[in-house]
Amino acid sequence: MSVVHDVPLCRQLIDPAEWNQHGGSELGDRMEWSNRACGMAALRMILLAYQRPAPVVTELVKLGVERNALTPRGWLHAGIAALATEFGVLGRAEPVAAEELPDRIAAAPLIISVTEQFPTDGRTGGHLVVACGVGDGPDPAVHFRDPSAWGQTNDQVRLTRLVKSYSGRAITFEPYGRAGARA
Image 1 (cartoon, rainbow, N blue to C red):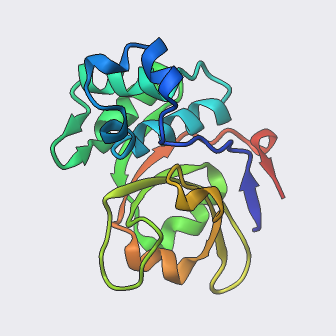
Image 2: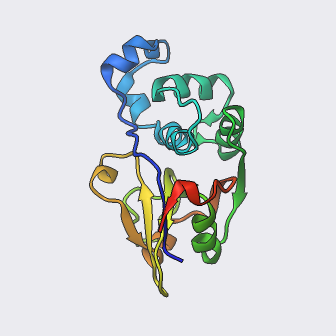
């Protein structure tokens, strides 16, 4: 079943020029927002993968705040799904059982809630990444795009490790067929 969807990597660290050009200062401190932008960077990756209009992260953050997709605890999955749908990619916030992840990832990329760097100490959720591929075997490699600094040099993790930090919640998207995947 080895499938890897073509999903470009976007960073959650917002470039100062982008922040200034797109009015980010209206929201406050760029670095504070960069630390909270994983959901909008993940959304941008999905929009680019589906070849839809993909505003820069600053614009997505502003739109997400305007649409009440952010709470003090983080980005609302339903809010991100609604934004994706606004841009032409049908999104849905839903629980996805760990054992379903390989088949779901093979069908389409997902935004999943994990703990940054996939620790195995029992912490779950709090960070959003795009799961974009899955290998073969009983403990397949899961390919992901992580907008954090750690994700710039890490793009695969074994399913058993991912599951230990996975919250069980995901944002799912319509399958885009084999055109967006490579075997």
